[in-house]
Length: 546
Image (cartoon, rainbow, N blue to C red; front, side, top):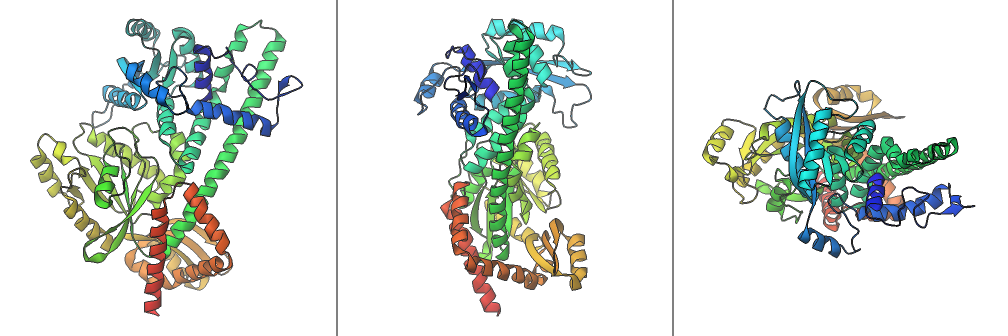
């Protein structure tokens, strides 16, 4: 975040600049910062590149290749102190409270490269609107910071701009403040590897940063206090806010382009009736390890939170040679920032096109029930709670008594115990996936003539409709429907596919351009080749039927 960048620049003495006016190489017109979007955007790009090299947990500027960071981490990590609040009415039915939440916050801090040196929490009826915590707890934190040498204080909940400002005044400028949302956004920024992922993270960071821009300009208040200085400060904030809003608008347009590309290829995939199985679950539940074991996908899998941000799709053959597509998705977490859910909607739409969800659970985790609830809440927010789901209890080999866990799972029809690491239970998992898919729903994209309105009613009644558009000849629907209904809709889907093929024949160059765009957006060559194989298989099957 830019405010963090400026704070670090001040702390590290980099030319002493505290605002856009003071920053080096600022574009200027007649001695003042240029207000044109192009000039400022060019300079902002340089600042954003610099910001990308700054991470929570790194307190000095590093080399471009990251080697300085490696040596820094070997010497000493930045120390942080954690703060949580437990509202009396918030403790969950599974016993997930402030202590468990702070423990998870500590794992997030470790993922970001920080060393946790202490923590505290407070039980409150309601939060303090000025400082979030009570004045006595603020004094306690000041003493803890002095005793532990912590340079960063991280709050377990999102703080308002006013609370951040008041806490900064109380704790002093030498202590950096961060909340859970900012920490998660920073981790996502570090982990984003594709153009799509980077766009989504930048949008989420911008949405978080927008109401906090005034923090960048508080130094003006300490100057002479003249009306002229105050007016200049207010004007600069307004300019910066307008530029940031413009940047957010462009990011949304870029993300919408990515979303359109994904939708185009999902439509092509839907024309080949191959079921999609989406892996969902809490972060670090073992989804990527499971996908790697099933398919040798080579997806990054490590004991860190949010190791996977970008969806990966691989083909798996079930018994009898039936092909299905397995898609790995970003993990969820307690208190997942709403900015991330909104920004990553283009990626999470991969879940909406699934015929079956595999809810992967780290059954060895002491807070597994609360993690299940957190995932279910996000799935409900995405509107996919009605897609058939199979519960996959992973890491059974890490449980204190695996036999008891297996016995409990055996009594549940929709649950299977596995170890994605050792491969235990994978054969049973694939058998259950095959069985679920027989009665499962598949994604369809059809054009139903107005003369067959009863089919539209049936699709709404038995399926999950993602979109419906009324055209000149009928209703164009994207929906999940039972396999039996999908087979009856095949002729109508063929009409849509035929129209798409005709358009592709007239615009092969555009199609090649789309594929290049998908490669830029993070699709791998293997995924595109897989899609082409599916289309060829579907065309061959259609030719055989004719």
